[in-house]
Length: 193
Figure 1 (tube, rainbow, N blue to C red):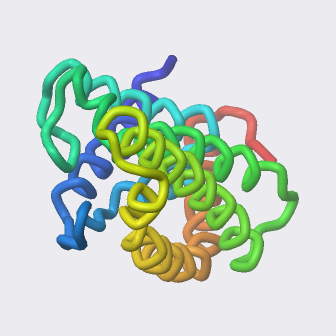
Figure 2 (cartoon, one colour; figure 1 turned 180 degrees about the vertical axis):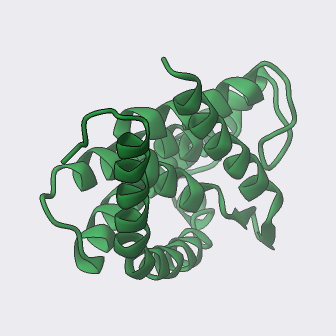
């Protein structure tokens, strides 16, 4: 694995850490920017590297670094919000793999695949959250579902951010692509695409 690639992966790991710190308290759990940065990592890095950035983030938290919204450590797997972290790796992979399949990019396609990735984050996270409340915390199923009341608000916030990115993404991707072609040309390497 090339050093540049590792650096890009670590950048998105750091962005996800920052996303955990940028939070708005909505009972019972905060709304953070983690899911947004996770999907963005897939869109920018591709499915494999985007998922790797999120798996690295999860690993850092599970070894004890306080990078999650409520700290860290291996016992965090029993936190109701841990499912969203698992979903972030899946959502990043889905968004990144899907966006790479298009021959041409436009805002609608980027928003669609970003929304697909974001939806997977929330489906996995909400299922995990309900299961932890029922199986580990002793809630009845109705009360467990009541803990999801902030999920639609967080999803809407992330969807709006993805919509903004969707309009910027094709232009930035074109710029990066032309910069890469210039880099190849300057180094005497064959041009891509």
